[in-house]
Image (cartoon, rainbow, N blue to C red; front, top):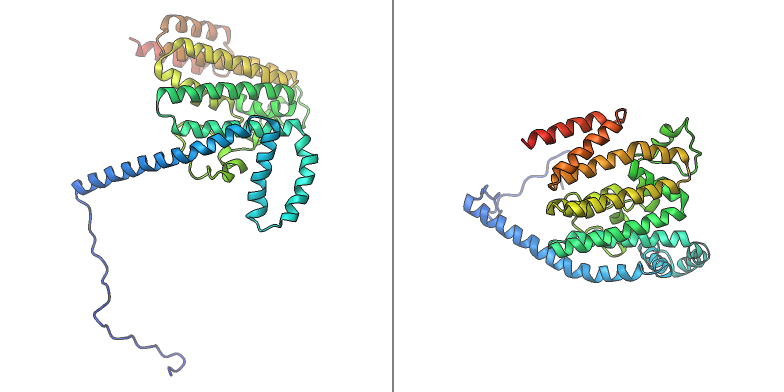
Length: 335
């Protein structure tokens, strides 16, 4: 027996211990081969996920097809995430469900909000696999339909419209606060994230977690997951493919629709000061971006004249100096 405080003697080496493996750096040829294997693994993983996501997309399409279906899908997701996974009983879920059927289930606005989240989640999944022009066109068409549905919903829901203004004006309005000419800047600065109105990052939603999409969807650079950010959805899913094709007519049509829809959202807030701020600040900025896209797509003559007219008509706009520098840069690079 070892006395307290004494060290236990080491066992003698038996010669069977495994020594530390020596460092074995890869040669250039081995590294190139490993890199090739990693890329093949990535393609194989994407193919497997594509097959898996096809069935999940079908589930999402079905769930977004009506308010009742969206509500029932939400119930299924809540049961799994908030009851089954947390060890709650079937009785607890049944009691909770009865209450939700009477409250949330009869709330058309809440159910329509679920449909929008589900619709956008489907778009995000589709976009993650869109590699061909046809697939990208499908995503763009889906995004256009989604944005029209979102705009129409804002026209019915004043509070949502105020929240969505955060994605349109890089600011947000507290839907519960009265906005006046005196406090508009302070009010609009309070909320940056419009996403709260539609549940935040759609890949972190209960729908994505239920379908295990939160960890399996790999988004592309520049893609979006915020269901309430109209600007980012237009830029990443609709305009970017048109910019790559230098489709001047398509770009003009998309920007025109974007300005028209965002104007409807601003009007839906029923706050004169927000409408005025939108018209005076955001609309000219969007028009300049449209003209710049048209210039890049090959319509230099028309776009250059339009940019000059816009700058001349808005000498005190907060972005007028930046516009002037951008126009000088474009004309210099064209020499």
